[in-house]
Length: 120
Image 1 (cartoon, one colour):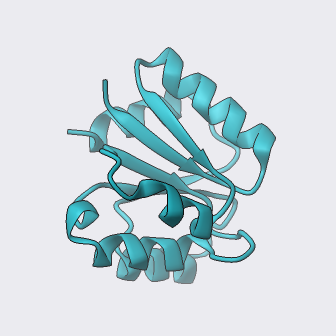
Image 2 (cartoon, one colour):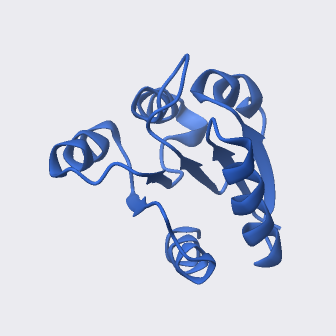
């Protein structure tokens, strides 16, 4: 079973995303921000990171840069799941190493479609 790390400072959003992912056959690990995500990922086999951008302590862009700097996770897909839809933010995400972008609100089917496309 492939594992997805869900990083968002909204616990209700994390719960909803994890419920959708588990329903789609994925295991999940939750983190409330980038700093917690980095602390939890060492030694974990992660197939995908789903992260918000705007979070306390460490935002999703910095988390993406940190993940890309770690050899074990350098090529793991990172999907930004955010309310941000400005082209500049998307460009910043792409430059940091994001694989794809989902704008909130999203549908469960839409989320699973993107996850299935990027997880190998």
